[in-house]
Amino acid sequence: MNLDKFLIKLQRFNSNEQEFIQSVRIFLSSVQEWISDDYRLKNAAVLERLTEPDRVLMFKVPWLNDEGKVIVNRGYRVQYNNTLGPYKGGLRFHPALTLGTVKMLAFEQVFKNSLTSLPLGGAMGGANFDPKGKSEAEIMRFCQSYLLQLWDVLGDDIDILGGDIGVGSREIGYMFGMFKKLSHKHNGTFTGKSPDWGGTKLKAESHGFGVVYFLKSLLSGYEDSLAGKRIAISGFGNMAYGVIKKANALGAKVVTVSGPDGYVYDPNGIDEGKLEYLLELRATSQDLIRPYSIEYPGTLYHEGKKPWEVECDIAIPCAIQNEIGIDEANSLIENKCTYLIEGADQSCSEEAVELFAAKGLVYVPSKATNVGGVAISSLELAQNNMKVNWSELEVDKRLQDIMEHTYDLCRKFGLQPNGQIDYLKGANVASFQRVTEAMIDQGVV
Image (cartoon, rainbow, N blue to C red; front, side):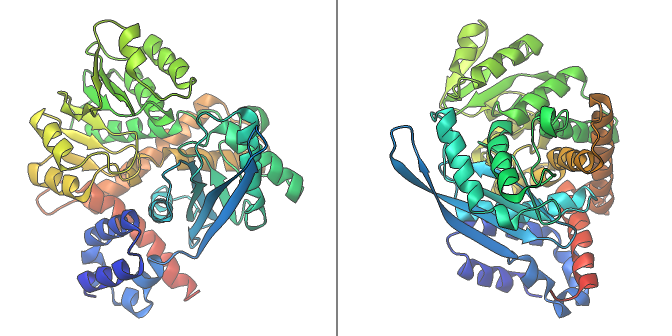
């Protein structure tokens, strides 16, 4: 297959969805050799089927604000591919959310879920709704209205919803309550529930813990460790919280944290006390990081900037897609960064990824590193189905096992003739192989 011609055609039919096109282009480029070696993929039109979602749902979400005014938002759910199991993916509530972003996230989720070796397909959804500044009652009414548009196409063996940006246990609770009322079922259709009524321990920390566990395995492969490493991260949501907490426990020092107003550099590292302060700061729903520098003298606040200009051994972007472009990539290289571990989905632009490869910086895509959230979700589903509640220690051990297995797959399929490891290729080929083999086995459906 001529990949360039295929991508031109894909671009023509999805011209307003640049995030989706970017994701597909990066993915297919890294598995191109695998594609050309297997005639079955062409005969079964696997690529054509993989780059079209099974179903795209787009709908209005009307709701009443506290003044009695009707507000209308746009909602989405992309059920992308269920070859390996029921659709599984998060919900994102963000004012800038578009269909292109949702399709990109759903496409990535298919292969992220595949890497875990769990029986889960991929999906994603959300709305251009901003929970910030809304009252509890307004958030509840919005969540209930959103769920009314979807409840009849959900189920623990059909489509399973979880959290993402703007959607935590509060929002999941409101949607689950409405789903339960409509369906008369109390099951595992939602993950990210409160541990008091069906959720699992470590859910809030799972993404960040998983990133650090993958990083620990990666460093071990280079006969290195986290002890004494300086880590620069962005964001201060659940992902960042989990990364900081586990990195501290393993002897590393996280020296940056950021918000939409800029970033803070803390040369002494963000210890447990400072991490608790970040949680309090986040609870204000303002997302501003400047108060941290006021609370802790000796730290430096950089307004309107990103944290990729500081010296660090490891960079872990935990905020949003494409936050590291070519300029930020150059800064990281100049400041002696050795490892770039994506936390947030598709954190780096294509140009940045190409530069990392050219300069020898070890780059690992989010597809591989943040499967911890998927892993914990699957453990939550298992506990729901068995009507049990595992301890934090047991959940953490299972999470470590899944992340070590994911690392082993990336290493195996990413090994190059020169002995180097291409983790992007490894993650993509390993996940692609599992999905496409299942698609061929199941016929043209």
